[in-house]
Amino acid sequence: VLAFAPYDGSETIIESSRTRGRSNASIEFWGTNQVQESEGGSTNSAPEESTDTNSINCPVTLQTALKSATQNAVYYITENCTKRAFTRADIYFTYFDAWSDVTVTTESILNSIPDDTLGFMPWGPQYNPASGALIKTPADPKTYLLLDGILYHIADEMAAEYQFGAQWATWIEDVDQRLLDAYPLSTTALTTAGRPDGILIKYENNVNVYQLDEQENTQVKRLIPTIEIFRALNFRDDR
Image 1 (cartoon, one colour):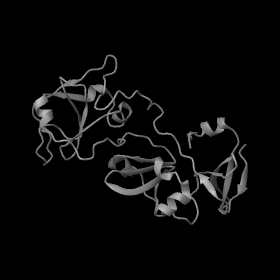
Image 2 (cartoon, one colour; image 1 turned 90 degrees about the vertical axis):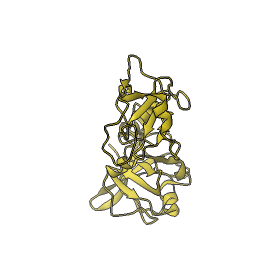
Image 3 (cartoon, rainbow, N blue to C red; image 1 turned 120 degrees about the vertical axis):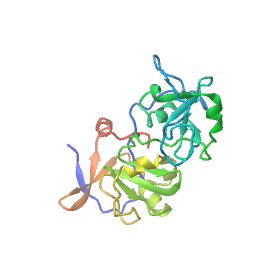
Image 4 (cartoon, one colour; image 1 turned 45 degrees about the vertical axis):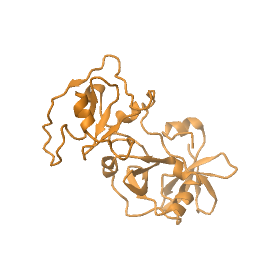
């Protein structure tokens, strides 16, 4: 049984925990521009010309995975017909389901596609950041809290530090715009005036962790008494 106590928001909060993303995202990092096929995996033979109907003149299909037959590096072809290398397999699998989704093309075609200026791959549209994540897109500095499937815009840096502590910026994850678009946006932005239900809090010099909730139209804090219950609720324990 989890304990409840009234919460008036007056205490100093030093940390707000967040949940882990993909539970199977612990694939080895093979190094810059290196992605290996899984055992028994395969790649597709590429048509030399794209059947893409996008108005951008691109020699391959947009928003696909591409490699040459002579290199291990796998690239993502953006909607602007530029390429970004996948440097982590776990990020690759937030865009595609299998290594067989990689199309093999000629080195000349691959080299004809310019490198994207971003230089890295954000988490893709299949990523599950789960409740409590801080997410943004590379193209927009606006940062959001994802809580119970709803996005809350964080109004400013003061609000971010109030809600999540001084280390808040280290928790932000860059994601694909399509992932951001998949969630409804709350009409209430996060400010320094109160905290949303569902968020985790703890107090300075106190090991107890609480989850804010609503009970009879009053915001209460719910004690999470054991690490087992904490993990069963799918929160990460590195915050």
